Image 1 (tube, each protein chain N blue to C red):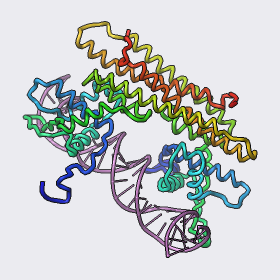
Image 2: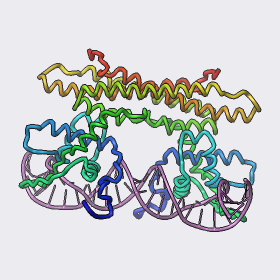
Image 3: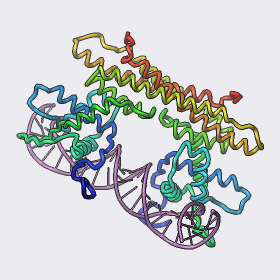
Image 4: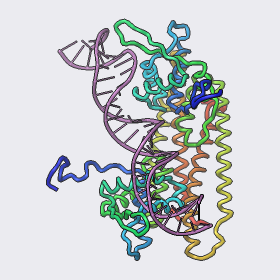
Length: 218
Length: 218
DNA sequence: AAAGCCATGTAAGCTGTTACATGATTTT
DNA sequence: AAAATCATGTAACAGCTTACATGGCTTT
């Protein structure tokens, strides 16, 4: 603790931002340790995580090849979100058992509590979050959906404001050719904005129709 | 035809797939050479392309740093879509003038004629295509929008079929806990599918409202 | 005897970002 | 004298994908 090039106080240089795949691993470790809470083992090993990823419905949402899986586990260990212990086995390769640290549990919980900011992150990030929220804490899942709806609704509002402003300052018809050029430029920008509005609106409708909002599933 | 690891006939090993940024460069070279068709110069240089990218509305759709721009120009030259000639200047750095080859023109035209396959490619690929189609060949832009609408409509139909089949084979209520597990798994898959349907539908509506479809812009 | 599972990785390659290097020349 | 323009790049790094390496064991 006393020496060296790395400051002894700041153990973690920067808290590195994790991607959805890494959070999914944290979540899967949590799920696994809940599943065999009465068992004797303390953690899960990579191969088991790979199996859980491939068989469950998670595989339809996020793909994770073994190469990346082991890479991420090492990284999570390096940044202190996971602890690893080697377990020797007879007539089988050694296993590396991974378990969440307190930091790891906190990181997982914080991630689950945080809605995503951009529409494009709904497809991967938010769906993975929702999967784990339903699995680990269904009550929390309801709040997550509500908060995500708020974020997307605000985003949609801001896009619609921009769109409205666009109609406002539209060309006062000056010189012919320069105005036509400018109009063509404005056209594609307006179309781009319209596309974003359409997609964001679709996501908002989808969020509103989710079972967490109290509909009966019939 | 008879020998060797690389056939001497097939000059191009594999036709490498180009990304939207690379096609945008091909398109910009075409636009530039159309703009100064009466000029004496045969091609465009990278710096000029960078300027055109940063000032026009294209910059709002696709971003391309100088580093990548020069990298792509070299690549396009390597695969024979572009020819490069050095032009010496007095009291200025040498320029490298780039012009489309016949292959380059064909590649650009083929790309402009081809709608994108996936919904997620609409946001970047299709918008860039549309920009160049409007710029280079507005008549062609109308056909492009129509074909893109067809592709997305078929995709939406297939997603809706899957969704309908999902309701069909829903659990005949066997053993309690296993069925609940399966139901939870099915739930997230259904939600994922619903999201894709919502987003695809939004893109289809947007395509239908595009000015190429003959609406008056008011 | 062959195939496949268990368990962990390495290696190579592509795509892309960010920041900086160069060196003369024109503008402020 | 300082700053910006012209014109072309390199270096470092980061993330992801694909394919393969290892080696003992169990099942067919």
